[in-house]
Image (cartoon, rainbow, N blue to C red; front, side, top):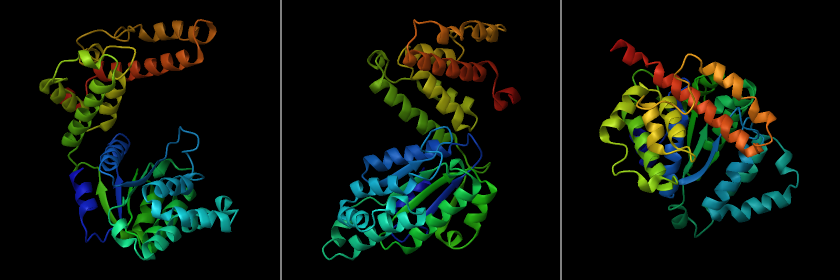
Length: 332
């Protein structure tokens, strides 16, 4: 987090792109989201796009440029007139290639705004950061390669100093793209590997999310201060063993609006049994027996079924984490 913020704040920055890469569960999306929240509240987030293979509309690049252009036109209003003119001059622009959209809706409007007399002082206070997470979840490898080509052109030809924070797994096609010019020269890299100490980032992530739960959960007002205790927080960080996916799963589980946060946290620590007997050898038999009733009984609405399925999924994840110790705990 500190290295990313230093990169953002460096006025002499020659690297317009920072590539965060690492395996699944290393914390790429959590870091990207945390930086997005930080920059949004400090008025330095120009736009963001989080790809997700499991979310329609975010599993390909069709809406990628138009989404960024829409957000940039709001965060940097000086480009709005140029974007409107581009759409008026070319009524087919939204159906053209990603490259053409990027030039017409982002590069050219930003360059026009930069060259307009009287805008220079105003633009100095405008946001600069664009966050692109999960490039490896964008369509097929050829789509990922093309997206990075478009990104490199934008970074190279923009006169407005946008910075791009890109997060992904180090898939072959993505590695190849970043190893070739012009991306190689334009990019600084942040690998989330064994040399990366995730301890403090996971701790900061958990602290911020627990504060949100305390402020926004229906039962948050009844939680003690501080919550959780320093000892409990340290224990969670240790149980994570450097894996953000553990911390993220715990937060989702504890944040259930239908349960008391402290009760859920006690389940994570093994101080209380889960609502479902997942600690029993017969937990799968229980799920198989009662799960189909969610879809056959008229008692459950569509939203209730979805909520129940989500809770069961999180309960299974958290119970597996709770009752099967992490590698570090096994070694200890």
